[in-house]
Every structure is written in C-alpha cells, then in structure tokens.
Image 1: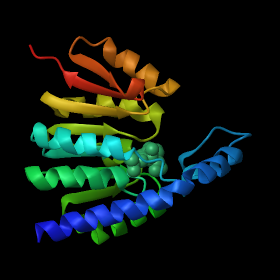
Image 2: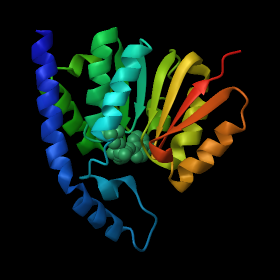
Image 3: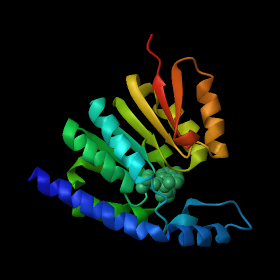
Image 4: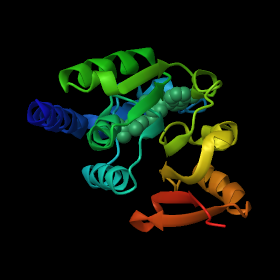
Amino acid sequence: METLEKDSIETTLAELYNDAKFDYIKMMKGAAKSLLRPIEPSDFKDAYLSISKEQGEDLKRLIKKSNIRNIIEFGTSFGISTLFLAQGVMETGGRIITTELIESKAKKAIENFKKAGVNDLIEVRVGDALETLKNHNDPIDLLLLDGWKDLYLPLFQMLEPSFHGNTVIYVDNADMAASQAFLSAVAQKSRYELRPKYEGRVVIITVKKQ
Ligand SMILES: C[S@@+](CC[C@H](N)C(=O)[O-])C[C@H]1O[C@@H](n2cnc3c(N)ncnc32)[C@H](O)[C@@H]1O
C-alpha cells in the first residue's frame, strides 16, 4: 500500500513539473497585466511558481531527519511543494496545513493530492493566510513561507506564539526585496538564527539554543 502511494506521488509530481515548464509564458502574461498597477496574486492564477525538485528533496530530508510532524505552508499554488512535504510526513506520521488565496488553484491542488493518494494528510485552507491561520494555536515544527512576500513578516509575527525550540522556518524567494525586509526584521531578534542556502534564494530560520 505504502509503495503504491509513493509511486503515485512521484507520478503526480512528474506530471506537474512537466506542466510547470510553461510557467515562464504564464508569468510573462501575468506581469504584462500589472504594468499599470501593482502586481496581484490573481495575475499568476495559472502559474505554478513552484519550488525546485532539489528544494523538495531537501525539505523531505529535513522532515525525516528532524522528525517533523506539524507543518504549516503559506502558498499552496497547485501543490507541488505540498507533495514533497507529504512524502516527508508519511515517514514521521505528521500532517500539513496549507493555505492558498486563489480558489481555482486550491481546488486543483486538492485534486492533485487526491490523485497522489495523500489527501488525508493535508488540510487545504482557502483564503488569505492572515485569516485562514488566524486562530492557529498548535505547535509548528516547520513553517514554509512561499506566498506573497509582503505577508512574510505579519504572518511570522502572528504564528510566532506557536514556535518552539526546534521550529524551522523555511523562507523561499529570500532574495526578493520584500523578503529581505522581512529577514532584516527577524535578524534583529536575538531569538533566531538565519542560514542562507542556494546562494541566498532560501533562508532557513531556526530558534537559537539557550
Ligand atoms: C510561489 S507560489 C507557491 C508555490 C508552491 N509553494 C509550490 O512550490 O508549489 C505562491 C502562492 O501564494 C498564493 N498567495 C498569495 N497571497 C496569498 C495569501 N494572502 N494567502 C494565501 N495564499 C496566497 C498565490 O496565489 C500563489 O499561488
């Protein structure tokens, strides 16, 4: 049974990455729409904007190595990153809450999770992460920040009471201007340690050991 599930995750991921090959065109179309106004998430409603396979494998390793069980993901898109997270929590007995603003993307992600046989490990919350995660009080072992970069700081601050000594915060697109502002704010807090990866495109935040 387990082998079947794993196979179908791999197959689903391969199909999704194949489709994501056309992201560049979709992103260009999205960017063109926002020439006369600020860019909006809906401009990229058809684009995956996903993490790389290498990042996905890294996340899987991290989850297994650190026995991570409680995961929150900001920015589901079509579910590529979530499928890697699911592969990790299949080994640790964990669960994932992921949240996506665009309803059509969230619906497609849920279809992908069902197809991959991991739907029961994933709760998808549709809407603005600041609302969908507002009442989250349970401990967070891993927070994956991969949504709108301006929200990294308010979301981090909102979820901070759920962090513990071993919480890991994985910041994607850390080299973008809005992410840099977020990281500077976090770096000022003595509680956290920041470690860049992939030439600064990712930053891993951990809680300093006392
Ligand atoms: C970079 S993509 C996520 C890619 C995904 N993590 C992956 O690797 O497959 C960012 C996603 O965040 C979503 N998003 C933007 N603002 C959001 C918000 N306020 N709340 C929830 N999701 C949001 C966007 O619609 C977009 O699908």
